[in-house]
Length: 153
Figure 1 (cartoon, rainbow, N blue to C red):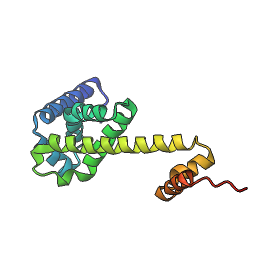
Figure 2: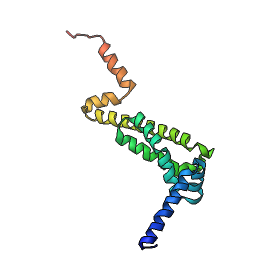
Figure 3: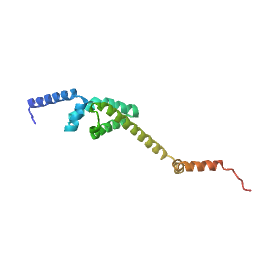
Figure 4: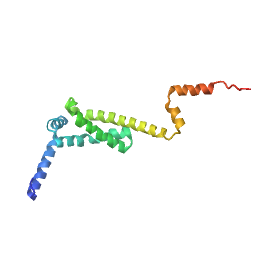
């Protein structure tokens, strides 16, 4: 790798030219480059091109910016793993929108479950038992409350 000032300038120029080529490429071309050559610049271009839309979907569904960031990252991890399944390849943006939406919905569901679980852990053991025991215990509690009060004399 060149270490002189001129060598560094040439390297920066080469990077700028390649970035311009990547920026002008279609989604299908970028996806093809990523799939066939594991071209990091092509993947980065897809993230830059579709990242704001993906992050926006995640923010609208989740509201919490930390959860939205996690869903954003998960969406692009899915792209890395499933890029070969996208067909037609020029619909990467549509595909990412769908993955982002489903990922954010799943994150929201998991957050709700965690919230419910943490709230129920604050209950006394007896209340936790009654809340978690299901229909049979609710029916039993109802039957006990409605049972006639017999007084023994």
